[in-house]
Length: 318
Image (cartoon, rainbow, N blue to C red):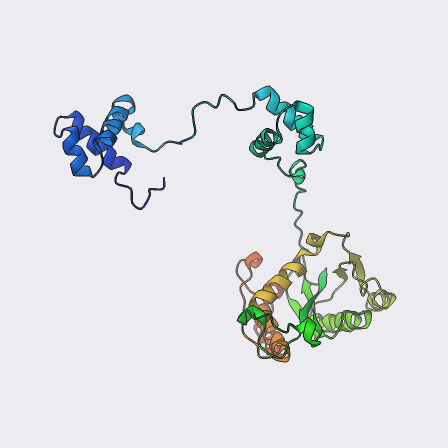
């Protein structure tokens, strides 16, 4: 129970006061002076203690015991039934002959104010490949280029990048489904040739770690649907899996990695220029793979999933 910071009486003090008055140690007027409240308050807590004992000293809800004008159970159930037929609030009001405000209150109590509340949320399906390389996730994040400290740090939006003609740069990311080992690079665009170049670089990076990639998952961006990307996957012996439209959670590990990268790298400090930010990305990615505790890996870094020998760790860690 939360007690107001200026409250004169807590449940324990209320009980102490009531017992003092009932036992004849203090009159109501004396108790009022001792406990810093009015005689009316003293009388109230004394009567409550007589009626309910210690339990009655607790705060209780200010909600009325009865609401005579509240919609009856039968009416409320009819409103809920009509709502489950996807009728709007005003339509339900016309059908039932009550005001839209009454319909709104009933739907709020039932947790059906929004149409999306009518149908239960689809269950979250979590999956993880049992060995590194079984699947890597690819995604792209567009970032604005800049020539001075950006508005996220200074709060000054004067002359933002898209109005100054500085342009954009695109962070291509890959993350292994089983180990969460990531690979990143920045390209000037998100076209097919950049996506293919990044894919080849990512496969080579994982190969250096002893990981053989067999599948790659992407969204339905134009670069990933291109013939060039399809041919690259075929030449590399990769099975290309695309997510269902408007279902980013399917590629959730890449989406989550991008959020982490934005928070801990892109917007973590005041870079003087976007080129300086770009130069810091390899160091941050190395820290993510080799040193940063990962929540889904029992607070161990992603590289721990490879179970490398000490010699291999020394050779690969640079």
